[in-house]
Image (cartoon, rainbow, N blue to C red; front, top):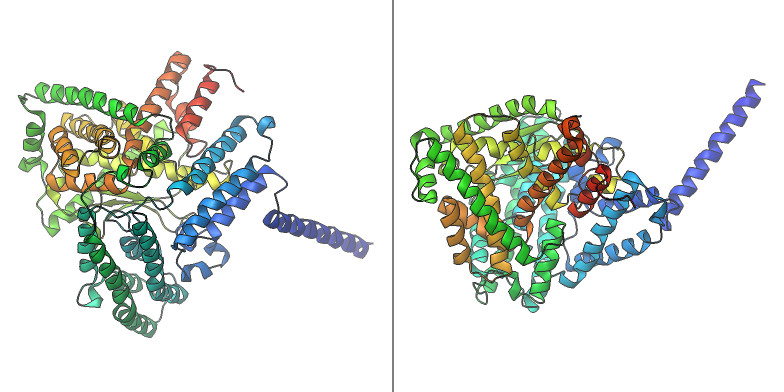
Length: 606
């Protein structure tokens, strides 16, 4: 009897496994039976075609699948076009599912994916209106940064895959150069001042002694911390890395340098994307992509001007209440930031101290944030310095998300190129923005959601992500994270900086301002250090529209919070509001705003 039951049970298991196998096969090769399976399909199709994303997410490594760590993602022009074409096909398939029966979060997720795919499909018209080699996030600085930060070394296989990727750099840069040639044939050439920035970076990368190159040094440091890899393996691996740098990587970077030096001869100094093919439409497209709203360029420019005036008025008020006479706000702020009590010594010791202070602020912000959020992400966050080789063209700070397996924490990277750019009264605000309650809290929370489709858990709509981080700066003020008026002044200066961005980004790409016009406006209205202003303006030039997402997103989160306060009255709970806006992952603002109004009964649900 027992034997008969066992045979029946095994047969049932066999039938179930066969059914699951057929379901997986059908999902991979045909239109998935359900919408949720379709979400999974497009997520896996996208990440499996992108080895670098797989390495960053570490979504397969825990299963023992590591072949992706040996390869680079395809950067060829053919792959760029293929991705746009795939978005069109994915959108067509999505629309074959009937959304009328969806409700609540399921309907929101459908609308968010539809919005994302529509923009991605439309990108085909502007596929080559970009500068893949630039001082901000160009492939030439992405390669060493990725290997130094995302490619983890846990065992000797990781070393072998690291070396394999080193060998593949030459092919990847060849792919990029082919894309640059197509762009050049279409009249798409970066401004001459951007090319000069990149050329300086390329020269600095190829240090005379390869053992001082970041690709050698980062591996050496990781090996020094690893007790699992044999000493002779470490020695032989580093020797091979040095050989590959000299024989393959350096020549590949020289080839790119030669191409850009030749391109520089035909470059001009026009800063805006209006000069590119169909440039005005392209800017409208990229502005919509980054703000996730239907605001026009003129709308964004006007909002920026209005916000600049408001914030400057608040800053004057704080200064005057502190007994500081203000005749020229920018001159006063410049004098204030240069005071010895607000500066760190620009020395190696001073830079170490800056990192220590950031870590102290982070620790305190975690303690203060927990009571105002309904849940907390598991992923940790830490503070590190931006690699020195890329400091000059990098922003003042940025955040890198954690891996999905929890082995690599989120990282707040601080730019220490010049400590005169880091007044002490601005450090709190920057920490809140990049870590807690800003980027790390929101992104780690989104990654760990189990209700949202995996595709949306790893999609970051710019206005949501950056808008939340700027909202986090204001949240720290609203919930008494600090009482020092100078720190509040630092917060306002950071918000002013984002408001000015609305003006200069639209000024450059819509109103056809020159680089010098934009630098002058930002300098006159922020009092920021010259090096920082130049780096920021050049950032907006190569990344049109992105800088507008911060303030537009912040305004949206604040407006929704006011709606919740107004409707809920005394029953308003900040934890409930935060749970609502963060609990679905990153969304386009126009979709989130509509969902918020429906939740509050301000508009009927449909």
